[in-house]
Image (tube, rainbow, N blue to C red; front, side, top):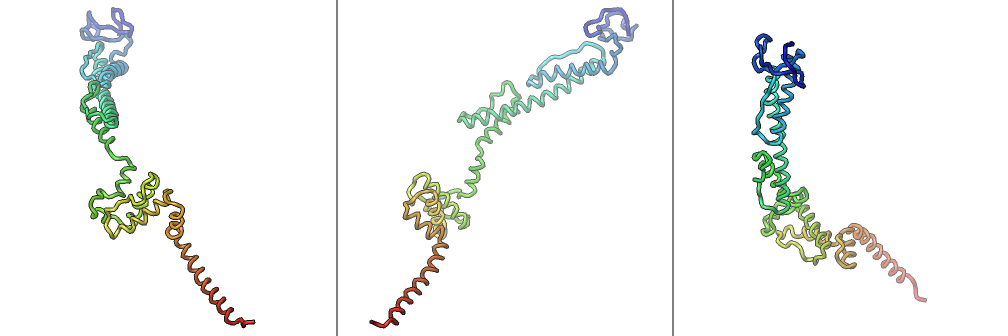
Amino acid sequence: MAHPGNTDANGGHTCRTNCDDWGLGYGEYHYHNGNSNGTDDFTKGYNKGYEVAYSYTSQCEEDYKWWWEGSQTYGDGFEKGIKEGHDAGLEVCYETSKQEGYDQGYADNQDGVDFDSGNSEDYDPASYEEGYQEGWDEAEAPSEEEEKAVSIEPASTSETEDWNMYSDKLIYEMGYDEGYEAAQEGYTYDDYEEKIDSSQLGSYKKGYHKGYMEGGAGNPLDYTIYLAFQKYWWATTAVGVTAVPSFIFYRKKKKKQKVETPPQ
């Protein structure tokens, strides 16, 4: 399409005179390269519209102005780009706002700062507040180690019935852990939990004693007794079973020899 009139840097201009003769509407922007009604024109409009809208909404700015100049094909592309760029930018805004809120909520909880999810001036308020709450809650949640400790410890040691839900094996292991920790911290041996049902106290004390000894506490005699009669009791038993009959046999043999030997 060619008609009188200078073109701009993009190779087009807005029709002002004799527009009907050229099949154009008054004020219609068009190109002289034959693409005014083609896909290239639509694509250029779409890309520009998308860019304009996205640049605002991705920064959480929804109040912005836009307009286009050019052919109707360009305008159709531009308006479609505005709509899709607007929506895509908002998705980025929501995600960014939620992450920023999460990070701030987590940090505030860890730093002992009062709960305040209202500091969302540069973000989407709803997304920021949602993320802040999640971050705050995550910081308050017990760690994996704490959850593991809770899973093996009773909810309360003030009442003996709380211990009845645990097996003797678990009570023994709890006693061991307490004893080992007591030894490491330099506590006295009898500094253990006493509010345990009498039927389970024996298992607890055995575990506590083992943990206390293996934690490095106790004098050499205590540790020797522990090795002989608790940790390696089977070895001590085996030695006893072997040694006692041998000793008895030896004594009987000596006595017999003494009787049979005539005086000289």
